[in-house]
Every structure is written in structure tokens, then in C-alpha cells.
Length: 153
Image (cartoon, rainbow, N blue to C red; front, side):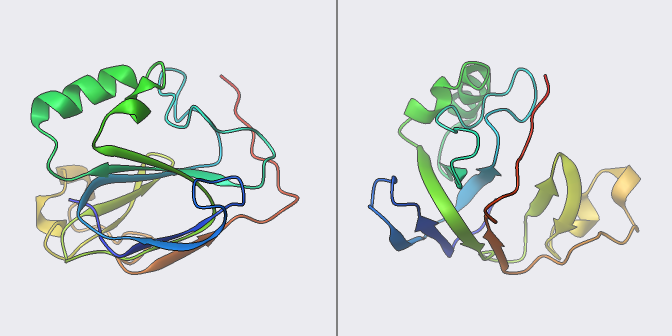
């Protein structure tokens, strides 16, 4: 499971009109995107616009069934997963994420970057005993103006 204690600073164009908002709970997935696609067939952030100075954050709440999650991943190709009732979508300029407990993983660009203490012994064999590049703790991510993310399918 993912973490709780997520704080987001919504961009002025977001639902809240700007300012910090705390989104508590248990999440299966917290996905922060600076581009629309995580892969050619994964349109994670369908409302993302290049150069808009924001990240699009997709939260999938814990409690969705396996069937719902399977269907959600099928919808990722077209970006329609954001309409599911257990998915939340935010346009933000900053994100503070804090783990809720000691189990979970953090992946950056698809690479395992950190794992909670309770998760480390359950990682795939290729990761067992290896030192990961990050610690599983509070993280503050902020969009820097003037940087241009690119995506080449």
C-alpha cells in the first residue's frame, strides 16, 4: 500500500483555486506526472499540458477491488481511468508525500528507488540485498519553472 499524509499545493487552475491541501488516507498508488504518458500505452495524466508549470497527481485510494484495479489498468491506455470513483486527480505545483507506515515502495521512472522496512524482504530476488538509492521517508517535490519535460513515443 501507498502512503497517507500527502499534501499537495494546487496550482491556480486546480479545483481548489490554489493553496495547500492535505489528502489523507491509504493509497494503492500515488503517481506524479510531468508528462501525459508513462509509456506509449499508459496515458496516466490525460489533462497534462506541456509547459503549464505543474505536475498532475493521480491518487488511487486503497479499497478498490482487484477487478476494479484490473479494469483501471485497462483504461490507462486511453486516460479514462481518471473517471473511476476511487481515483483522484490534482494539478499541482508542489507535492509533499509522507509514508503512512513502513510498507510500500517508491518507483521513479519505473525503477525501484526506495522500499519501506516491512517491504524490503518481499522484493523480487533481483533487488534483495541491494542498497536502494533513496530512503523511504517524507519527500517534497516542487516544479521548477523553465525546465522542459519531453516525451518521445
